[in-house]
Length: 364
Image (tube, rainbow, N blue to C red; front, side, top):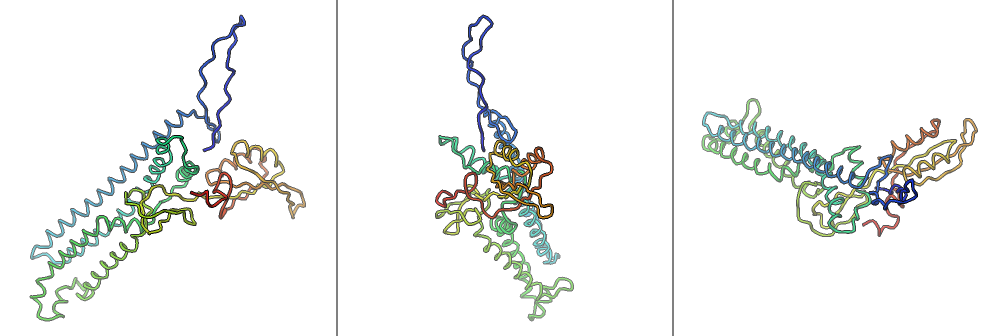
């Protein structure tokens, strides 16, 4: 976050008789940023309250995850107790499997929301509070922009596949295993009751669905769940998990952490901020450039251009910025020259001061 202290008043005040009063205590520095004027204490207080709010919100979604798991456990116990009644068909266990799958999908969706709030909490922990414990205070230069971008444009840190696989491995694998064993125990007497294989499949039938299809569907369903659990095991973008860290981590091409061994704990999800390139076609280049340099602390490059339809000469200003600065840029330009023409396009990569380091060795 760019900041500059506000000018401090004169050190001495003169009375009417010419005498001077003692020097007043030095004023607390004021942070000026995009039109805001906040003292350091005010900024810290705001961050503390924001942190408490995000922790509370993540705790609420954590409780919702536990609630869904409790539903799955209770319904499983009830279904198994009911299934071992001699008069109850074995399909009650299969129906409970479908209900548990619905709970798993719901929990995976809730887990993504939990990860959204946990990402903000973790970002503040690693880049605001942790540096305070190791003077000098030196947070990561992109943490404020990353947090602001997440507030303006919330997005899930993890995919639905990772959330589904992680909740399946953590909780639901054992629930499905218990249901499978209960179903086998329920149909085990059929092996003695049936005189032949066709008769055995007839006992397995559910309504108009043949027993062969019921057995194949059950095997395919459980094998599919196991494959999802195994294939998503290498995904480690979740913020709410405390896992051991193996191997050295590196920054991938898209700005995310990669681990050489394929395993690793989440410490701080480093993602490249969305970078943009703005072209401003205007007849007031100097006032606009001055405002961008002063208010946004962004560099501006001017080029000469010609409107091919009108033949008039115009100036073209080029400015690299992030997604959180677009609104301020449009506001500044509209105040100076409402007739300006602005083109904003995504940039594949912006290297240099204020963005990614130009030297790859400085990207740690």
